[in-house]
Image (cartoon, rainbow, N blue to C red; front, side):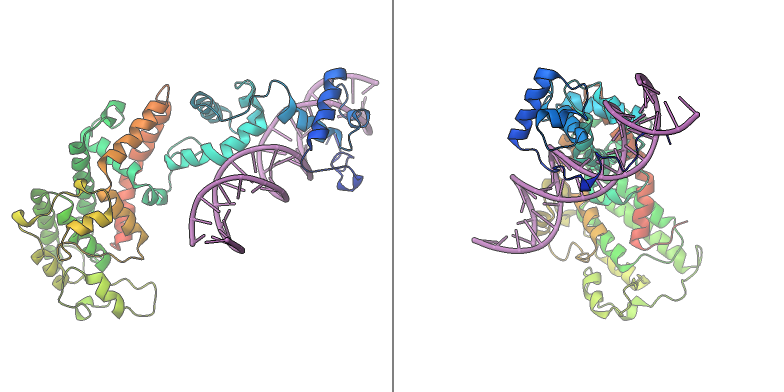
Length: 383
DNA sequence: AAGAATAGCAACCGCACAAGC
DNA sequence: CGCTTGTGCGGTTGCTATTCT
């Protein structure tokens, strides 16, 4: 290789030169010297300026901190946009990006990217390396509002899910989106051969009546009933081998199946109890009548609030250790305004809408796959 | 209130390359 | 042509302030 040896004087830690944070006195010496004599030779500068530092350290201190045209303080929205858009074109070429941001150094931009922008993009479901929608879906379990927003968009305009105008929606559309999403998931559950859902899954379904209106609820249970009858009649799939028969373990009280069943689980942590026809019957019997349906969840802002409004007999109690189910429930009960304002803020923050479009594309493109993942979490085999 | 964990940031490290001698 | 020097660059480290438990 042509160039500087890695063991040069500047990099050597055994040179006796000072390292670490600069003192105000050192800063003053450096600034004073450069203002007076310039910096023709960084190597010679420290000695001439009376500094016990290497030339490289002096150069970095000057270019990244002491230069008079350095702009300090928070990055503006406009600067954020410039960084993101140029990063998508240039990658980690921080100095090239810095040329578009007068007064900002490559180091400052790099730090800002690593500590703020990268996280921001990840939370929006955008891969910060490729600037494309993320292809792993675990994050959606942690950010249900993105998924809900995607579902809102889809339910409002399924033919053109990319239309940005659809994001200014009211709570009716949001509620509709919840139903739409639930339908998608249940349709896939019901089109999936056995093994039947786990008890956890059944518990989730047990909570459906408090989440959607009565018509949709009846429709969903009809799907479920039909599907299970077909399974019983051998029309779809075959009875799974090797699953314990949960009907012998489950007490008669529905819907707290998982909670009670937990006490009977074998030591094997991979064990997932499966639902039996008896469990389905308990579920069907638990469907509330139209006049007993509690208020729609969009009236409640938190899970706790919801549960306090709903009788314990009308909602199941998913395992407290099931994070995916907690995320799911958060999705279903999330305050509509919170979700809407999340996207409104996002859109308002952007000048061209590019970021928002990326986020929309990202959230929507992962929706279908997320549904599959939910199904897997539910413990149902997926084709 | 105190210790632990985390976030933010300045600075350093080591490699690479271009230009000049 | 080969060496030296200056500079660019990206990754990493370590200190400090803040937040969490």
